[in-house]
Every structure is written in structure tokens, then in C-alpha cells.
Image (cartoon, rainbow over all chains, first blue to last red):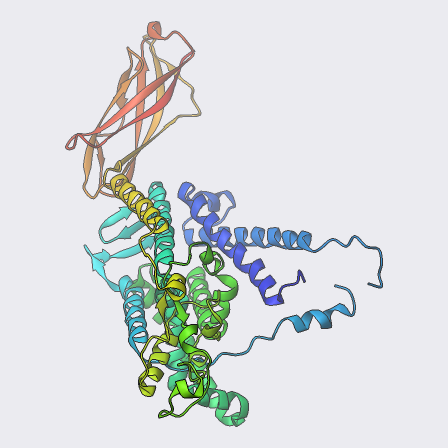
Length: 85
Length: 459
């Protein structure tokens, strides 16, 4: 796929979204107290670690989804209709 | 992918060959061991230090406070953390321009933990050739025992690493007690396992692949390197043509250079490259090849430094200048950013004021016709001392403050909320909304004050 080793594709998918999830968490929780979010979703607001963790996984998931779409669009477009090539 | 294509594509990539780095001793190896000891000592030791009766370094997420040796950082201080990251990036640029990948070879966590994992591997499976023999021709029973032992120790060490990591976020002594009684919270348990697994995977299995595929710095470091950067280089003019010879042979007579082609520089390389092919992006600058080559040069009674830290320009023309515009500009920007951060941090406001209007009642008309607005006042004292504050209001002539709670006293590193009313004469109000300013001033320190805007609403 894409002319690069599979392991590189997997790393690009998981690792880049991991990094962006970390940055997103840092930025968002500099402003928002996770207890507010937990309260909003009806979860135990005393366990703020779960707020941070769930938000991290949410951002990670969004990142993976984003990179998946990006990788999909990066596939070379075949202009030729010649299937024999 | 079309059918028939994969076979062609697959062959373009050599399958990853497992690398068995040979042990090396010498000046750079000693420097790395020193760096590993200091950095890991800090990592594993810091959370156990106490300061003023509490953990010295604690990133207290539930309380949203970062404690670093008596200093408390709040989410509002996020800007300083960003500044610190910018300075770290600039230092990386500076040192890379000066002497290549010093960070990778001596300070990167990947290098540091891999060094420990390799040390454990060597201790159990033996030196390079023994490890290769075990993998290729070892008896199954021996493999299971040795590999099982190695992975067991790796996993224990990783678990301790994960525990320490979580100990930076949860008081480590309590966490340890909870761990001993198997009563850690679900997320604490999860993050200990997650971080431990990452350590085990990266330092035990992935190793050089982390540097090659996962590290962004490895990809863009070439942008900071020029022909005057100190990098690890093989002196081709001196070394080539390479060839084996006996110690007493005169290489000149044999038509050989100083390189005896012993391949040791390749065997010690943790990323498995041959430095004699020139600077490659896989080179993490660990200088293991320098150490081992110098040993060989000593044994052959040749001058040291066939592989050495030098610049491209020195190798080409014998001349190089370390102090060049790039290095000077990086240094100046670095000094400026550091100065700015220190200035900003030392003069940072140690009080924050958050004023919110009571949203349920816009205003209240009192019996004498005056208009009253209700506010909630949140004072955050970031200082290490308790302070009492004085509040005044400006922007509306007839405005009068009425504090419902006692004195505005806030303990060190704490937030207090106070209820407050502002009363104004109806005759002085000309529009429906007025902007007023609250001035908060510490009574015992003139330098601590803050001004915050709010709205005053009337009929």
C-alpha cells in the first residue's frame, strides 16, 4: 500500500494520532476541568482520571479515523483503464 | 493493489533483519552509561522525593495542579509549558547544528531504555555471537528457559517503569500501597499496564525501528545539519582501500588504507548500518563505531580516529568553522526565548480573578429605587503564601460594593468563591448595560493585583 512498508503505514496510523491525541488533551484540559465533562455525561465526576483517559481515547479514535481517511485518499489514482498493465 | 504486482513490490523491501549489537567499551560508551544512570536515576527516583511534606514532583491531575519542588503550576500557566517546549525544540536545533544527533545517542528515552534492555539481554543470553547462535541453532529447551527469563525480567522492569510513570500523576506512596493490596483504580491499573507495555514493546522489540519509523526528529534533522556540523564520519581518504592484513604488515606495501575491514563498526551499530557508506539518516549518533574502531586502531598500532566526530568540510578541505551564522542565530533565538520565559515566569501574576454574573436574576430593584446586580467572584491564589485581598469597583460613579462573605482571604495555592453585590443609584444609569471594572489588590503586596471587566445590567 502506498509503496511503503506495511509497518510504516500502521505506525503512521496509530502513532501520529496518538501524538495528536496527547496534544489535544493537553490543550483542552488547560481550559476545561474534566469533572465538568464527566458531569455532563452522567459519569462519576470524582474520578477525574477517567475523564482524562476517556477524552484521550476519544481524540485517539478521531485521529485514527482521520488518518485512515487520509491514507485512503493518498492511494494513487489510476488514470488508465488498461487492466492488463 | 493489482494481482501479480505484490511479488515485485515485496522484493523492493528487505525484510527487517534482527540486529544483535555487539557490546562496546570506550569513552563514548562510558558517557552513555553515565547519561543512562543519571536520566533513569532521575526518572525512577524523582517521584519518591518529598518536599514540604508532600511529593516533590507531582502532576496532580484531579486537583489540576502541577507541583515541582514547592512550585505550583495551574492550568492557566499552560503558556509557560508551551514556552518550555519551544525552548526544548530550539535547544535541539542548536545542538543538532553543532554536533548532530547528540540527543539520540545519549539522552533519548528510546536509547536510554534500549540500553538497559540490551544489558539485561546480554546478561542472560550472552554476547552477540551467543545470541545469534541461540536464535539460529539453539535447542528449544534452552531457548524457552533463556528467553522466558529474559522476557520475565523485561516485563518486571517495564511494569516498574509503568508504575513509576503513574506515580508522577498519583501520589506514589499511596499508589504503591494500593498496588500491594491489589486495589489500584481501573484507570491507574490500565495506565501502568499501558506504559509498561509501551516500554517493553519499544525497548525490547521495536528498538531501532522506533528511530527509523516513529521519530519525526530523525526525518527532519538533516535540515539542521550542514557541512560544518560535527558528525560521526569514516575517513575514507585514510581508510580506503580496505582490506585484511597481519599486524606486522605495512599497509603501504599492500596498497591498503588503514581500515582492516573487520566489520566491527557494523556489528556494534544498534541500527545495523555501515558508517563507512557515509552519513545515513538511520545513524543515531551513538558513537559506538568510534569506540570500537579506536580499539582496533590501538591494536594495529595505527593512529586513532579513523571513524571520528568531524565535519564534512574538515574531511574535504581540512578547514571548518563551528561558529557560523546558523549556530549563532540558533543560540541567539534560544537565549532570547529562555530570557523571555524566565522574565514571564518570575513576573507572572500570582492572582487570577473570575467574575460571573448571576444568570438567573438580571438585576434587582431595591425598595429605595437603587439597582442591584449579583456576582460570583472566584479568586485563585497561585502564590506560595496566603493573601488577603481588597476589592474595589470602577466605571460607574455611584456603584457600591457589598460583600456577602467575610474578608477575601485565600490560602496558598487555593481557589475561593465569594458572593458579591453591586448597588448603583438608578439616576446614574444612562444605558441598559454598563461595563464596570473590578480591581483586586493583595493587602500585603502591592505588586499583586488584577483588573477584570464585568457587566452591570439595569432596567
